[in-house]
Length: 293
Image (tube, rainbow, N blue to C red; front, side):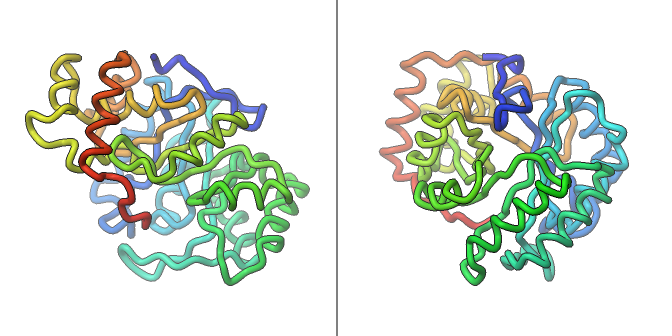
């Protein structure tokens, strides 16, 4: 398993199966600018140098800060770099998120993202949440309008069930699903399996969360020691082994941490390692953690 392993998004964009999530290059509470904007730019440049060619962000990160930093730092983008962003949230303060799937909001959000990211078309545009207060047909219909207008290419979803995915697929092709998922939280196993069966990219957010599995002397700790790795690196490697359509997007504001994350792609877990981790997760009751970002 190496960063050279790839996944093709929507049959169009082939990317390495270890991306970068740009939520953490903002301020505390995912609000405002980072404490060290220069360091954030260094992280973005280093990610590309290391071969990362899939960067995921959202208009709500900051809000707008993450997209602005990406555009300022990396545009004009190197060939093959895929930029994904999301819309469907509004922010009122640190750690404050409110869903808004109103078509007018989504249209304005897309125009803002295009400007901040310095793009003519967004490669992958994801509905950050399905808004229960707005008809699904109106939300997805707006994304289809944006695609017809040449403003976006592929459509993705975030925090959806298998049933949600099927409902959306009756309206539009879906290239990706982004749900919370990690070695400790398997709540969306059925969604991973559905994406695998349909060759849809599954983009796990919070991929480094390891919960009680991180306890000293536990299976994760022992497996990490056997591979001369960190528990976080083993957690990322587990995700890469979970399915060929999984594309983890670990985020960080540190170049050193970024380099550690990318190195996780070279860790080869065997069947015994995976079985131990799976059993430990079941035993610790680590499934069903909070699904709020």
